[in-house]
Image (cartoon, rainbow, N blue to C red; front, side, top):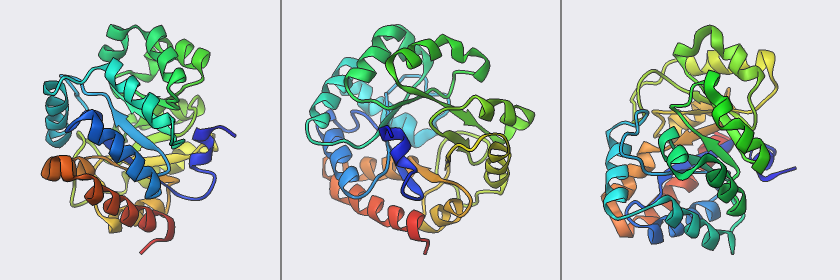
Length: 259
């Protein structure tokens, strides 16, 4: 069983997201280690990009802070080498097609394998064009994660049939960001996926409270939270690690055991 399979092997998974390099790569490394110790089952690392079309303002601003601080893909890989010396937590990159192609897809996936990146999430890569990256992902043993959204409609079964690792279910229409109300679209999407493929489904976008996480975990295999954590990082900056770690502990408990 590889690291990605282990994510969902022991019950509901909690998957936090942070932007690499916000506020610095040193703090990102501490956040990854702290979140892993607090029980994060998989950690999503966002590679900062100047045009992150799937992100709301909170993560857009985190991208700008990281890029302004001089973060690069090479520096992120170097940070991961340090993390892997002491930590085996599963890691997924969330990024866009441009940074991957600019770096070179073959080289990018090769370095993913070398630094222990388990999965790749690319929101602006349509399912029909996944062949641009899939051969490299297969060659280097990195799962290319499929996303589905309420607008996917009759494409959900098609996408689910060929999905690997897990399916990322976008809870509601729009970009990332904290939402007060999350509709029932995610429940129906998970149902449709499970009809054609017995693969884990994790729900993300909009979730910020323990109550929301517990509700999503009732029908899914995992819960992904990004903007709420990035807001903590934005608020506390270099002092954010203990605050994020405590938040992850609370959310992990809510996902695993309910409220």
